[in-house]
Length: 578
Image (cartoon, rainbow, N blue to C red; front, side, top):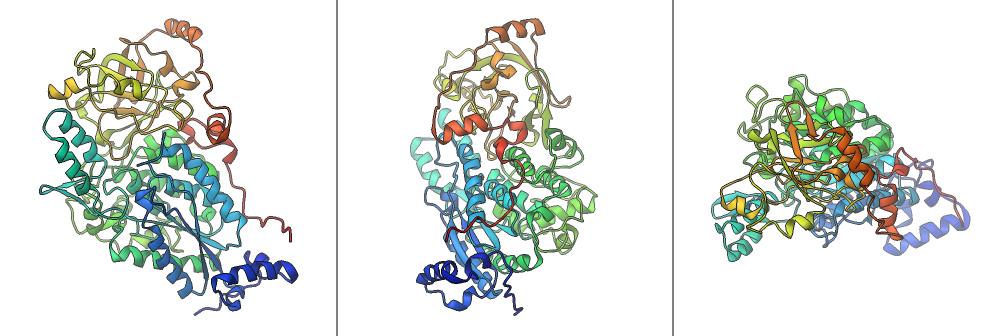
């Protein structure tokens, strides 16, 4: 074993201190049973875990942390586990996205304030991964991500069912009488049958893959199921690797460069990933000073086909994806077609090209080859512009209905998701299959927190008539497990005076995805008149975190981060009061 004792390590400002200060730091740590020899200058590795029974996707991470500890001890480091908050979308109200920035702040400050030389980040549900990456990037100590892995495939009456995706399907079946309440209760347990996050290509799986594509997670580790023993092997390997990263001073700032972000954007297109990756990658780029705009997400994916046949865009689930070769097989396919940068360094210390060289695609139904893709190039996320979204909006083409990608229809406007839900089952609701449902005041400031409400269910009367999709436009987000022709992240949002606030029932809305346009077919003079009549909504929050959020959150095109958190703040050791 390499002797890694080093008196100049950051942690030695605590544990190597002389006199009363050093005695205080060491002696209180020794109440946990540590011998004096562990404070000899070896790397101190923090294990940040978002384990929580209130975030079911993260509940098993305490066991993952034990595997990381084994690896750290093996490599000669000192592992110290600490908790962070968990932002689980499944339970938190009004939305976990409201708390992503708070979690990022907490992770950043906990890393900086404590005697750590490097950190392993344990995440599960979709907001925890970007929050941890954002916080770690702002401190810029060596860091490696370990996501908790997807659940096993859901099984219901002989078919695979996907978390999230089948929630929407079962809801439609219930409304149309194809399923009973009792059958729904039974199906719930069939859908979520093990530890782990969503096993569809929802946002949790997407962000795990994105972390790997960025180079912040060990190759292949995004896809191992949470209950597969190799998930623990991966965690143990990450524990060993972070000790070497400290020795090599391999920090996020060396990994998260422009080419790494371009790789992540193209990988997201190839896997049929979530639109939420746009928000999270943009926010992360802001932390490391990489200029990343909405147009990058459109330009970089036009040549990238969808290679992965997973729900909600396709048929299979993450367990199948893992055994088919996982993300390394996808990245190798893209690299061979000249669609990825091979040079960026990763947490392995090797380049993307070196990491993917041994990758093998073993199931071409799940991971299709570049020359015979699941969906052709240009079917990924599209960025729209127009008088309804001057700062942009996005749509996930692979999950939309092709016949609706070019559409003109009258708006039916709702001032909140709740206002729509209150009448969605009304048989007298004035809508038909051509109607464009507009949901507003669901943006970062307006809701607050930009919830996953944009893919509202179709009106019951249309579902019963056999209509399966219609155009929906919203300034909120959509779960990565969702599907449908839904325009998301309309910016600026209605609550800050974006054009969505000016739409009225019956206004013609024109969607032209091939032309990358979303517009309101109302003349400028009329819109100007409406703007003069518009008044901003009253401030609902006067104190607390939600007030801080609404005062400082940026718009969706900038990642919905806080403006004051852009850029890094480093890892300078705070003053010692002892």
